[in-house]
Image: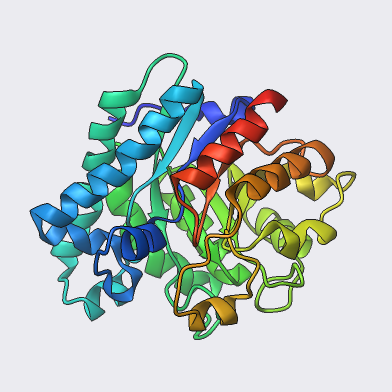
Length: 316
């Protein structure tokens, strides 16, 4: 049974960490093979499953150390029909991979949760296509039908909510929000932006958030930004604009490189963890006063999240 589905504790405004860049950590730091960046594929072996367990335990321990909440995302960013088919998964096998991902996070929660460290389990929904390029865009209705399959599976587990990570065009985000509403699941929408602070389609972040809210009756619990460095979007966010109050979460990249540059990079760019933590704190103080769910994306690991926690915990 879901523990927090009817009352997400992060909505109270307390500080919550999330994990870092799971795929880049597993590939570059743990030497794991992730075809198509599919972390859930590690469940195929005991060694792979243990690598996932080790990864999530790291963040359980970090949240416990700082005595803050934790939102853990299932390793299911690629666990949707098209990507599953590329990896040779049947519909039943893909559904079981989603369920197994939730069960693993239930295990982590049982190990690390306390009254001061609530652990929320989020079912991660990834884009149907490329995370960086809005190619093969779906209509809102198509996106609702496509992602509804995975969301229905997650709704039947103990996941507390679903989070759509690395959304790069608004119709897919709207479809996911509607599918989540149909399954009675809370949903978070996380957009990615280019170095100019706009979505890959050219739409502004403000317009994208407003459009999703208008199309869904404000159904998303909140919005996030992920897979972009703070320097890419800090200039397009002003603290006195009402839409910024809808942003509660941030999972930034370690690197200041563009998406295109990251795609071509032969090595991991881990950036500067301490500086990244200070940039989060500056955003919280100056522009995103509602920001309270913080972690990392590409190139980040527990070192970055530790610095984010150290810099931001005093602000709560």
